[in-house]
Image (cartoon, rainbow, N blue to C red):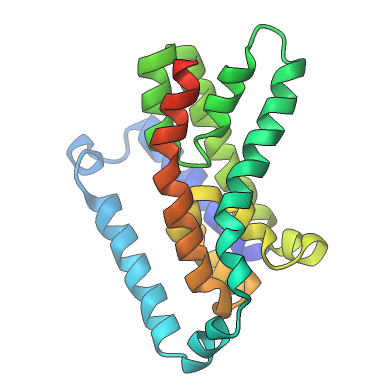
Length: 200
């Protein structure tokens, strides 16, 4: 839990630095965040590759776990459809479009803004950021209450990048390859699902 709070505190500190103008604009427009993410993935790869036990554990995983990304997508959309039935002023397709972002806030909010307007795009941005923050903060609790696959499902598209370190720590190194596969499949589905529900 302490590690999750540290991660979120860095997120909040980044927001404050951006709002207060403490970071030069040319730095924020550069690809620093991309290279930081690449360095993070490299370090996770070193950690996994340097531990032969984790790869051996992955070989022992049930092949049915390949269905985890599908179940994450189906579960997310089913939940959004149910919520959409009770939302006043928003259609079920609006709720499905927001949920179809699966935590990929940078891409989904841009698509939704272009196709449905800035108000729903902002809702999508905040909704998907909240999904990532919940995955970061609650991963230890999710493992304790719902099992070691729960943080992977909650993380959605972020399990191959930003939430991967916390998943590695809480679920175990044997689930790293599964988390990357899950993130890739869910990530790939986002542009198709978002545009589909925005066109309904």
